[in-house]
Image (cartoon, rainbow, N blue to C red):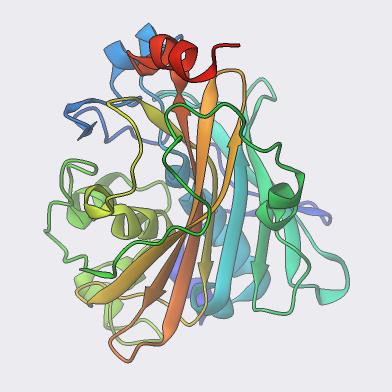
Length: 318
C-alpha cells in the first residue's frame, strides 16, 4: 500500500492537507558552473543582494510527496506532476511547510503552496496526476509572459532551439558533478521526507520491486548534463530557478537506469533584473518511451554578467 511510502505526519483540515514544518538542507555550497560559484554560495548570493546561499527550489518538492501520495496513492509516483512558481528564496535553518488544497469531488488537480513561519510564500503552483487535467500553473504562466526585449545574455537564443540527446543515469553513490556535488546516498541522509522506497534495501519491497528516484532528485538527473547542451547563452553569469514543473508521464524513474534526455527552448521572458530562458526537457527510457518532462525557467541575473551594461549600450544605442 502507498501508506508505506512515508511515515510523515499529514494534517487533514478537511479542506487542506498540511505537512510538518521542515528545515531543508543546503547541499550546493560547492556548486560551480561557468567556472564560478553559484547563487547557492553564501558570498556570491550576498553580493547579489540575498542574505545567503539559497535552498534550491526542487528541494522543496519532497515535502509535497507525502501529501500528494495521501491524496492520490500509488499513481502519484507513476503519473504525478508538480508545477511551481518560486516566489521567495528560502535559506538553511528556516522552517517551511507544504500545503495542498484538497480538490473537490475526487479531482486530480490541486493548488499547492509552501510558506515560511511569517506567512511568506516560497512557492505557489499546482499538483496533479494523469494527463486529462486542467492546465498546470506553468501552462497558464507561459500564456502570460512578457516577451523578452533587448536581450543581451540570451541574444543568440531562438525559440525552438533543441539540444542533441544525451544519456543520463543516477546510481546510489554517483557524484552528480559540478552542478550537483553530492550523491543520491548523501541526499537521502538529509532529505526532508525519507522513504524506504528510495533505498536499495527498501526499494525491493516497493510496488515496482526496485528503488525509485525522489522527485526532487529528478531535477538533478535531468540537469546532470546541462553543461553539454551547447545553447549559446552569454556568460559567465549567475542564474536561479524561477519556475519549474516536473511531470512524470510513465513512471516512476529508477535508480541505476539509463535515460535519454533532449531539450527545447520554448520561451524567453525578462524582468528588470533578469533574462529568463524557458527550456523543456523530454526524458525517454531504453524503449524510447516518454517517461517524464521538465519545464524550467532559468533566470539569469543581469548584474552578474560583467559585460552586461557595455554590451547593452553597444547593442541598443538609440
